[in-house]
Image (cartoon, rainbow, N blue to C red; front, side):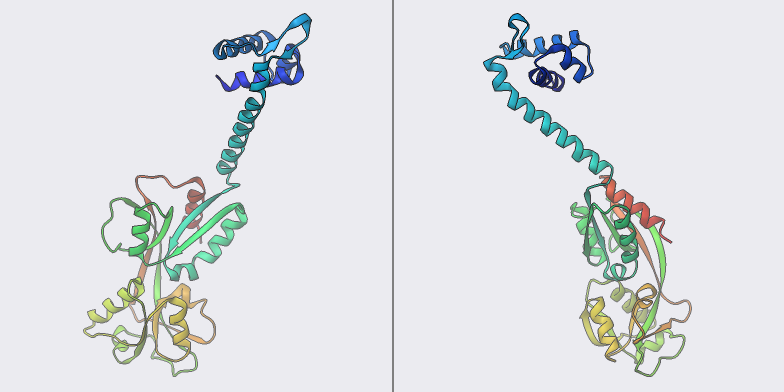
Length: 292
């Protein structure tokens, strides 16, 4: 049983005329009649009674008609849904990102993407690079913004460098300012507000301090990004954060550059190597890669 045969059958059933049915479905009348006959042979029953030029449905035709209409309707629904997905009228993107990127980079990019494709659902998961690599590998994410180098080599992922960003020191505007620019060794005698374990920023800051021969002193540790900035505003200590985040932090925080060579981090966009991202995810990927 073929789709076209059902289409021709419904056209004849609704017009009760082979010629008009053929015109309706844009096929020659002999071709339509041939396909109807082939359908009847496959089903083993006549579908139309052709007595004295009048076309009526047989019992078999009456039974088939609602089923055929349902099949054609479901096929049309499938066609429309697939077209909407292909044309980015519907769909979803599952994007993972570190909390600092959710605060700094993503708001503007996601606003642009939403304006272009308002029907696409955006699902965002915050986490450290280690957690996001695991989520990518198990197929829970389409794309992820990660900090390079990755916590462990992952040949199953394809990564493209997106940007390199300076890190800066933030302090409460109400507190005495640190020296400008801040050297890493100046942090030896400064209380720090530190992110929880698993944050790339924590690992990078601690590694830089150890390279200068000391362990940093934490007044508060274990917070997420917003909590860390709040603790700094309260005067509990300094924090090392991305410049992009510091630029959005508000007037109650003072931003001080790190002395050269400073600290920088490289952000990459990653996806699984063995599975192509969905169309909507590829559109977001292109937007991220070309974002100024």
